[in-house]
Image (tube, rainbow, N blue to C red; front, side, top):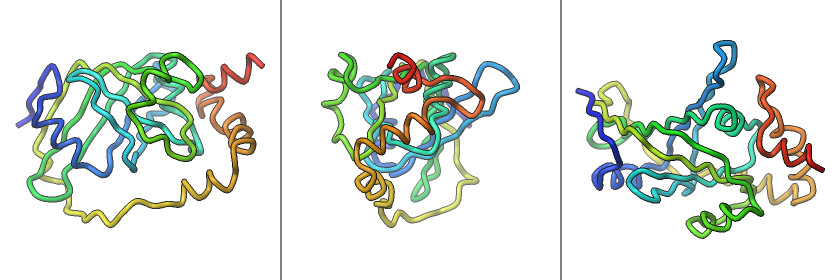
Length: 187
């Protein structure tokens, strides 16, 4: 039942654009490290070309995807249909972290509405698209976005957010220095 494609087709893009939630998976090279799966909400994902996607990454309690991309570049995106026809769609590729105040940020940022707490853009070149049935995925109904993260970042302000990122987003749980961590090391 699974089908493989070499790029995002228009029907895939239409499906992806309807989803209110997606998941990002990454892992370190070593078998001792932790596999990370992060849920992403809000309107942060953009399909740039049939083989390129990016998402605006917001400040969180960890930064595992960033660390894994710096180490090995592997990334997987997963989208699920919780309503209507069942479907699971995965994007496999290699990604990188794009930090603010860089030329790459200046190129990619206009694709997004920059939300409170934006810390980086995750960019990926997609080499494989896989669809599968999704028959085991239950029905769920979307009720809306949580505003908690936006309120939290607004309350902290830029100075406290910077200190928070230095403390919580500089090193992964497996000890890999993230690109954000590298910027603090240079200071």
